[in-house]
Length: 178
Image (cartoon, rainbow, N blue to C red):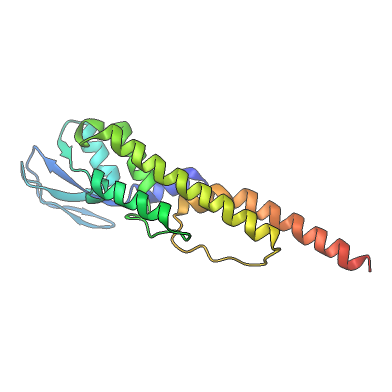
């Protein structure tokens, strides 16, 4: 799985939009969407929200977890904890990236949101690197990846699998030489 696969999964997440048009329910493979009434929020998949936004058919409502206070609180919790904290959304990084690229004008305090999400990502990445260093130094054979997002797992997968292969080769050579 690469970054595009993870982003593909993220665009299926539901997000609230405020349409400026009327339309009956839409019947998609994933379920019913709508009805659409001007000024009344409706939850749609992120891909549809982006399409409607590009056609100027809606205004996107930022997810609740994109609130500055909530992000600052999550950042502090992540900083204070030795273990990974549960994220407010399993695709927090991808959704933030997509919304800030295509709908920054609909996201309150978009620059601060970007900075806070990036700070949380950086904290988690540093914690992940430290965990991997410890894992490799102690020659562990398995690890628990609780509360990591798919994107975070995807970023460490190549390094971790290569490191484990090298460790296995080194251990096999030292044990075989005796």
